[in-house]
Image (tube, rainbow over all chains, first blue to last red; front, top):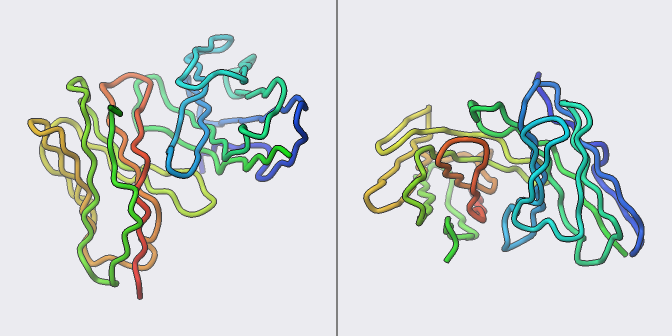
Length: 113
Length: 110
């Protein structure tokens, strides 16, 4: 069964901490994405990557960075966590031609206190 | 104006009813239209995928696209409690990036 695996289901971090969210896919997909999902706001794209070491800003990149050193792994970094970054974070991957759409991970519920 | 508009609901219907979920969009470049289903505390999963205008049926689910009015619909026949979820439309012009609606939360009442 193909999968996108996010390292943590629930995280609680303190304001100002550096936070790493990890995502691994086993489908040899070229594209990987990080979204956050908030009630009433839906899915908002933070960053995406079309290839190893490539990254592009999405709609809300402020306060975040990403790293893609290997094809299967895409990391989201919160440089200095703030309470307004409390959210559900979803990682997704897709093939180059978007065949089959996105495959999402189960999400990480991050709470910043 | 958002590129994709979707009524957030919540929508509650009795078991066995026909459900209609809808989105409107503004970008004429959208050519592919996807519907995702998201159960509580899970990531979204692809439900249906259509290209251009017309209907596509998959079991109890029918996706309908009217590009002239920029209107996307998902119909669920003989709705079941297991259909209770949030449904997100996601049109795209093709290529790597999807644009998601905010999602409609659906509850099927036994």
